[in-house]
Amino acid sequence: MDVMRIALQAVVVISSLFLVLLILMHKGKGGGLSDMFGGGVSSSLGGSSIAERNLNRMTIIVSIVWVLAIIGLGLVARFQ
Image 1 (cartoon, rainbow, N blue to C red):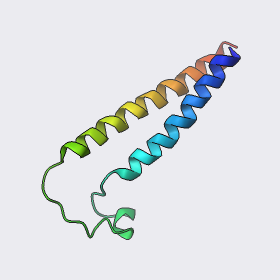
Image 2: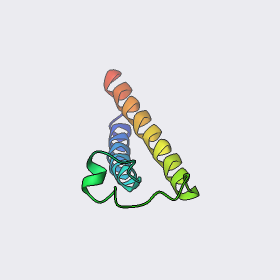
Image 3: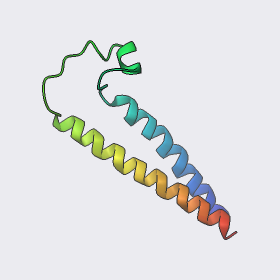
Image 4: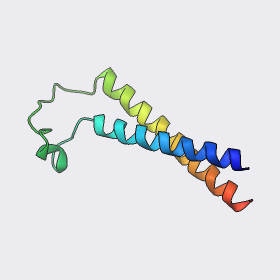
């Protein structure tokens, strides 16, 4: 059980860092902190590009991995 717990903790840490990176790569929608850091200056060229859609998909996949790892850690702690 210790090996599984350590592996799940590693997955949580790596996925957390990757999730933060992916979220910071998203384009700001206006208003809020994104405008303060220059997000409001960029012009919208209409629609979401393929890169943005892929970024959204990757963010969703990494967040699902993160949630499953958290649930797994909870289950390991519960049945230990």
